[in-house]
Amino acid sequence: MTAADPPLLQADALVGERQGRRLWGPLRLVLSRGQALHLRGPNGCGKTTLIRTLAGLRRPAAGQVRRAAPLWFVGHAMPLADALDARENLHAWLDLAGAPRDGALVEHWLQQERLPARRVLRECSAGQRRRLALAPLQLAPRPLWLLDEPFDALDRAACERLAVRAQAHLAAGGALLLSSHGALPEGFPACEPFDLAPPGGRA
Ligand SMILES: Nc1ncnc2c1ncn2[C@@H]1O[C@H](COP(=O)(O)OP(=O)(O)OP(=O)(O)O)[C@@H](O)[C@H]1O
Image 1: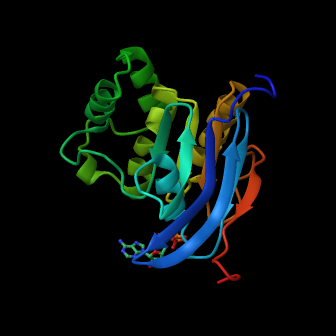
Image 2: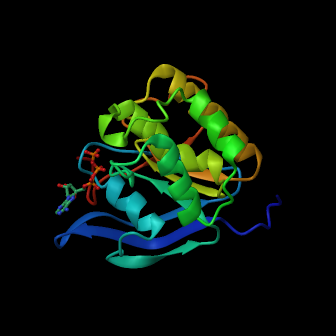
Image 3: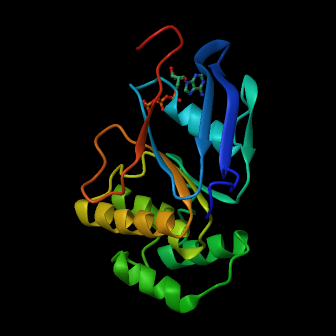
């Protein structure tokens, strides 16, 4: 990792709108290897809209986003199959992501997270579902993490495990951007704040 490395993610002159109403921008955002950003702002200011735009799931009203590395996006709507259990969901994901099926790693992860491997997802709690949604970060590593409220519904132990994984991710040259209403959990790697205020002032 050197100062000359290009950023993993760069947004320039980016503008976000909903139904013709400007939410934020124009803004510039750069995310380099080893860097962590904490996206902050009041309800409705457009954090989800920005993260989805950075992930390429939404077209900006103006400006551009350059993504120089594969990414994982974990948002509110979790791409889980309700009729499958945790193990089946993980295997399906790994297949879809083109990642090798490392059975031992999956079993280790299921044990670590104490997930009921044979319970179908529709019978799992919100926290169990959230843990599962975060699994790809560890099971099929990608350099860029874009996480929308990743701590929602997670208990303290799960937050601590995510903190350890985030630390390792950054140390390995990855980068992350996350939104979170509250303070980051104890032990989470230091993140630079990125405050999202509506055009013309604070909400
Ligand atoms: N599908 C939609 N259609 C129209 N407007 C929407 C839609 N989704 C969100 N909005 C509006 O866009 C604005 C930004 O929403 P967004 O979810 O990006 O904000 P947020 O900062 O992530 O909010 P929160 O902190 O409550 O999660 C809000 O005013 C919201 O009402």
